[in-house]
Amino acid sequence: MTQQNSIATNEVDLIAVSVAGVVAHPAFPGLPAEPYRLANDGTPFLLPTYGGIVYNVSTGDRAFGWAADCIHPGVSIYQPDDNQNRGLNVFACVGNRARVVTGGAAGTTGVVTGKSGRFSEQVIVHIAPEARTRMAVGDQVLIRAEGVGLSLTHHPGVTLKGISPGLLAALPVREEEGHVAFGVTAQIPAHLVGAGLGLTSEGGSLHMQSTDRELLAELRLDQLRLGDLVALEDTDSRYNHGYLRGARAIGVVASTDGPRAGYGPGIAILMTAPAGQLGSFESPEANLVQLLDLED
Image 1 (cartoon, rainbow, N blue to C red):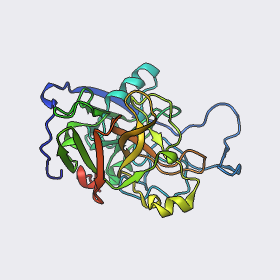
Image 2: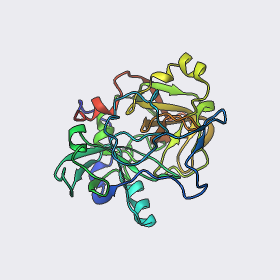
Image 3: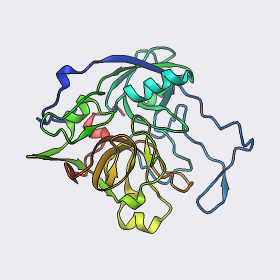
Image 4: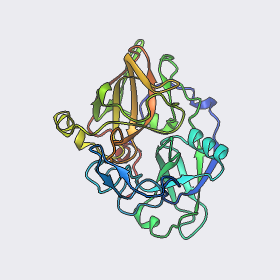
């Protein structure tokens, strides 16, 4: 892991608890019966989507340009029981360590790199590509969940959301009295925040919009990589995701772009503040691959 920062937290008071899920099968809703979805221009499409074991897309790869609809890199897990799945999605934190406990890759370790929500409700785990070839749908993955309840000792106005103490300690940070800023690879303006607005911010994800390709290129957002830390301007994610002038949220790019309107790359929110307590600065290396030393 990268060099640790010295930001003060209540890590010593946190509970570490086991949560687990099984590798999810990619799925389509039962209705409508046809599997087609509509792109932002109304064109029907049929492409691979979230779930399963993705062999050739990993955290650190590009977020744009795949023939896919919101693909999760690596391995996606869930619990068939809705209540248990909610517990998995809320308590698993980005940066938590995971271990495959059944199947051909049993004993292999990994790291939680993101979440998805609303329709998929899955936790995304980075497993080394070679180990993925030995896994199967239905294999169980155990996570040492630690991070819910984490707070910044000297910055009570900043709310932490689904981030492990280890990842928080690895982030580039600048502190001042009453203000803290973290390094990110990009700033996303509020008008590009898409699907997920209005929904709960406990677990799940918030997507950026990607229909305006010229604007994405102008802001260099089309260069985003999976695992990049990004800042969402004027976005308050303390309880539900919503617009608020002066607010800010910071998250990690967890899933790829897709053709649907409002469903650009998915972002798992890691922290937020409503009134200027949270800032960000440019840090090109702020990606989970470097921050967590993810295995190739």
